[in-house]
Length: 362
Image (cartoon, rainbow, N blue to C red; front, side, top):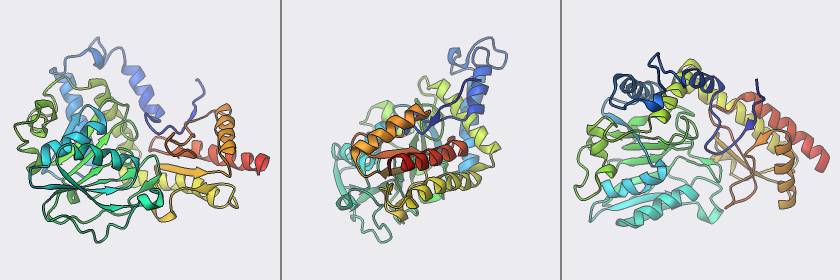
């Protein structure tokens, strides 16, 4: 077997080896049909089964209540940044946003194109190295929704608990941490996530939407951007990203076999504790970027004494088979993304490399 890289890419990210091997086996001939899933009609019984299975597995694993729709869409989370205000930001209402970093800012900027918006909490003054206190948020009286970014991939921060928005629908971008830990879905009006970090390959976007919010989108917005279009057509209004949906279905089966979301949270904490301990016990050679109480269990950001040293770390780690440890170009530094499919062995290897690098350059 070819040697697998230690893949710490931020997205598209590591997929479980067992899933890739299963997809490889079924690639040319799916269930005896004499063709690949990519060649099939999305109206046929075989694909319909895949579509239904992906939705029901997600319902089961994430404990999604019956009064929520599961939609399988395209266009990534970035399209949802615009779809949300188009569908929910009516004249005379305000879209409320919590500013936690690069992705929250992108969502906010899109909403500003469509109507009134307000930032109700922000950690910008601290360079987004923490999640702001959201325990007693004051929302605009006419708030249409409250939007949060559950996990900031670039800065490496994550909500430890979510705000209580009362009667105002809480909407969360969970692109980079969906299914990394159990969540009470009933607290949210909507959860959305691009698949390419924890759910599968790029190409499909998951939307979990409370039924009352899915019913009547404004008639003035394009058909494809209306939530009721996809809710009424079981995500088959147009040709879906069928191969990506199939891969999501395989990943969800894998997650179920691993013991589900609670077991995955423990596994993720075991992995990230290893790396955070290596950072914290390095005597200041490595410095965590995110404040400890806001640290992410999906994206671990850290710095070294100088940019030269960081570049050297990235270069030497690549030579040792590590991929994706360079921080995002907008903030620099280093970052290890430890999504569900990243094995414990990769994290152990990284900790070993970090210790050796410190010996050589400390």
